[in-house]
Length: 257
Ligand SMILES: Nc1ncnc2c1ncn2[C@@H]1O[C@H](COP(=O)(O)OP(=O)(O)OP(=O)(O)O)[C@@H](O)[C@H]1O
Image 1 (tube, rainbow, N blue to C red):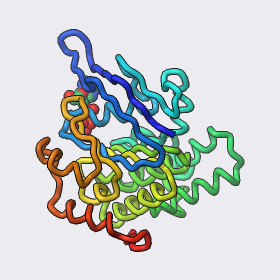
Image 2: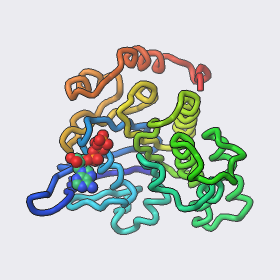
Image 3: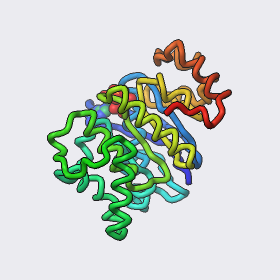
């Protein structure tokens, strides 16, 4: 399972208002890779990942999921590539927590017991277990974010793409989401995290891709990306270099999450 982009160009607006957000992006994300997408505000991160499951279609170039062009089979791309939006409210389709998380699995035509199992597991994974009947509009922003992540998890996608997933999360929720991402990655799911906050996710990454002006400016393992990121003014906390080394030398059982 891969996501490949070739010569991706995307423009917003038209005429004098036209702005090129992606300017020739070639990327190949392999099976099970954990990729952090970084870059300054407006560098094209959100525009890029929204092409992975056909939410946006390129003006030039192509995206392939598992070898199949997204333009030919957007439904397959959406099933394989789970997406958690920057603003979780963008993705809600129901009034209550349980109904919202169940929506995707219901569309896959699963049995009621399978749907219930997936909903329960996904909500447990984000510390929202037992809250199926609560109204989404009565939840805090951080709780809504966690439900949005559960909705994507319940689809059991091959790739999970999260756009700024830590915004608005308190520390326990942040640790819980990080632990879940780490476990998913370990179990073979590809994880793509768009974030300004490299603090905890950087050491988990196999690879860091940074955009600048709609182009790939850095594409390297974390340990090799630090200097190039600093040159792009992407903030790399002091302790990240230490963490990269720690994670590289840690045993699998030393996971604190
Ligand atoms: N709906 C839109 N209409 C016009 N221009 C847009 C629109 N959305 C994004 N852009 C422009 O496209 C470029 C890339 O935006 P994008 O949101 O992909 O960047 P980003 O790296 O995700 O930014 P941020 O870190 O601020 O979320 C920016 O110049 C932005 O102003």
